[in-house]
Length: 107
Image (cartoon, rainbow, N blue to C red):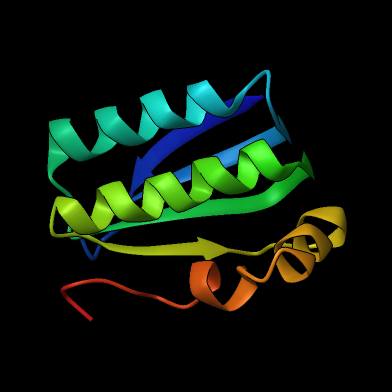
């Protein structure tokens, strides 16, 4: 998996994921989320999954952990652009609405 971080004009940090989010790569997302929140204290954290090709239950848990950590740091959180199997996985596991709706203390 490849993760690219950039900051938007509204002070949010975006992590763009490419590849697979699964048992072998979920720890990478954890590391990038922690680093983004600790270094820049963004107003929001956005996880862009436009180019995510696969997401298993471990990946779903990593997204949920990212949401929790963002909220603990006082940042909003949102997963954007889920499609294909990633969208289906989030829907089947019942977390699609929770993760794709902007949430957090600054909403």
